[in-house]
Image (cartoon, rainbow, N blue to C red; front, side, top):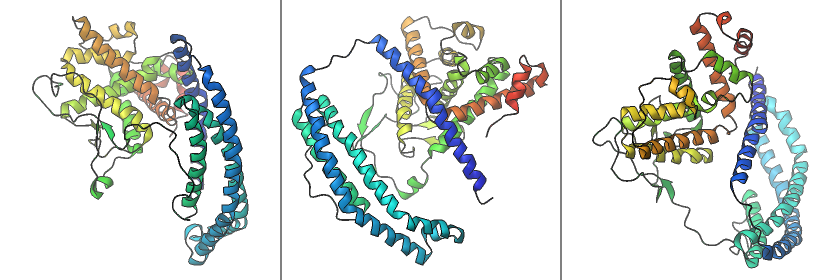
Length: 440
């Protein structure tokens, strides 16, 4: 159907992910913020900075709005004629939107309605200047300096001029002044990474040394060759492998009767069933198994189930991945530094899977033994809490809930098939309803 059905399906997926953000991720953020506010003292406001904040906010509105408007109006003819020039060039040479014959009418409408795009861009610049100017009050409060707030107002005009020059392929840079409005900080060119792991002596989960757990140390990242760039792991590969790993670990847990069909059905039926084993435990347990597998293999990064190793050189350059990739590597080094025995590892797996549910943890006999040393027990419990915290943050990502819900439905289908018939399950009608609505 010339991609029509795929476009409709992709649009529905975007709407589904947006709904998950609104109804699940956002309330979770609010709940964490509420708990954080209860545990901490109220923040004190520096009243001496309030007059400066108000003055800079008003100054930002008085300066940025007219200057943004003037710059946008002056450069709008350039945008109009350069856009027409590019579209007509594509029309003549049959490139870009005019490559396919069926797209020519739509691309022709783009030529006719291009002036509306220019007008919309000017209006957007004027509206955005309001928020940019008001943010100067925040700069004053953060930097505790009226002068830096004024510098911000001036710099933002220069930044806008430079941005529009680059976008319209005009002269590079800007002739306007760009004073610094932030205090000098350490260079951001260094990328934080953990020291590489190497296989050493003793234990099934050896440590690189007997020192304290590894610290985040800034190191310059060497330039990557073209071959390394081609072999870079994509974010979608990591998501797919993570969900596949959750499915595999979930099947193992179903075979061991650690989780049941009732657990999966209740989690699918209600948005907040309170079953943290299904909600966070399976993913945390799966990630822990990946970390332990990487330690056994002596990997410097994370060794995925498909044999691909993700390290500092080939990891996706994605901001979302930065939020949990480095913390997981730090946990990996801490597990190595503890030199845990097989019983300690089983104890860690039990804590991670059941997310603090002591009753279910005691019911699962996986060979774990609580360490006699209370300090060591506390260290293992801390690692478990950090792993669960990473997964809790990761569960708020836009596509996570949709993907994980599909995994749970696959596990439910496997559990019903394993039991022999759908009618023999405890909640037969609910299971039947869920199975017939499996999503891709």
